[in-house]
Image 1 (tube, rainbow, N blue to C red):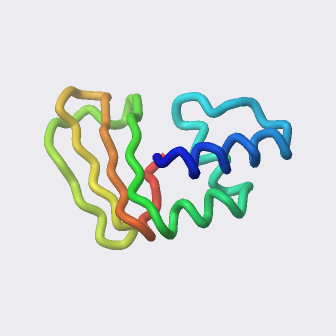
Image 2: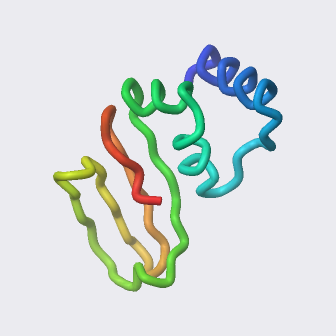
Length: 89
């Protein structure tokens, strides 16, 4: 994330009085903020999920949501979304 993007995020969080994001909290903020919608349209995003339902090893591309999920260890998923993709969390 660029310094300008980080600055805008800090301003947005200050305006809405939202605590800094924790693991997987970015998906919640994405639904609430115009700023995050702009980020989803313009930038690549990635994240880490810990889910009991992800007990497989391998990778999966979702053509409808445009994201790649990679499981190197069971229950731990690394996800990558190109601009316009929908995060899996």
